[in-house]
Length: 244
Image (cartoon, rainbow, N blue to C red; front, side):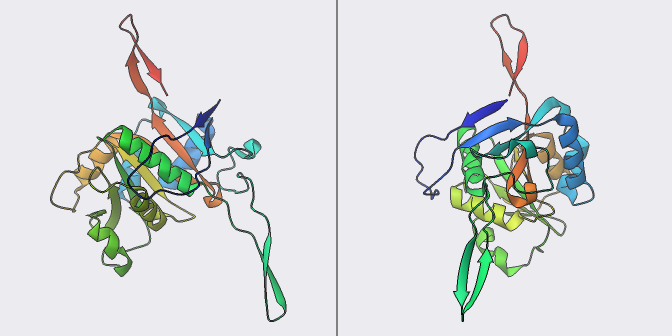
């Protein structure tokens, strides 16, 4: 199934000047869960607790791609070339030509998608893990000032919530979090309204228990695998059904 996603309305925060339309493509559960487990095993507290506490059968896996993507590669999570590829370019210096090709991504589109989710549901916060930087890394100064940096022991976690959400902050946190071998974000209804940025294991577990969506870097950095918890709605006869 393919669903076209579009974002409407203006924001007072900084947004990309050109955002491509994204299309939602459902992923096979059994093929996708193996990739997800491989990405979350033995990484950090957030990943470990997500594996323990999230019932993945209670939701669905999907990806968000642009028009013209190679749908035959939907389940080639560790390879690229799923998005339409950019043209080969060249530069010339001192008579020598160098050829290069920019890797296409849906990063800007995903940031806008996340912002849309946060605006639609003020209870949601966005959390990204950090696997390469220590808490005292000087490059984190700006995110400390934005009150985005939370700490669990020696692990860094980025949190975007109601008081600091905008496109630029989401993109900065995503860029910091990104690694070709691991990058995980979650949308959670966990409560972060506290004066302290130090988290306990119980806080990490609360994040995971209240997770509504998981975002994992895939396709060699071009796109992402997402999991969304099914929403329960009531029919006229009072019975509940699932809505994705």
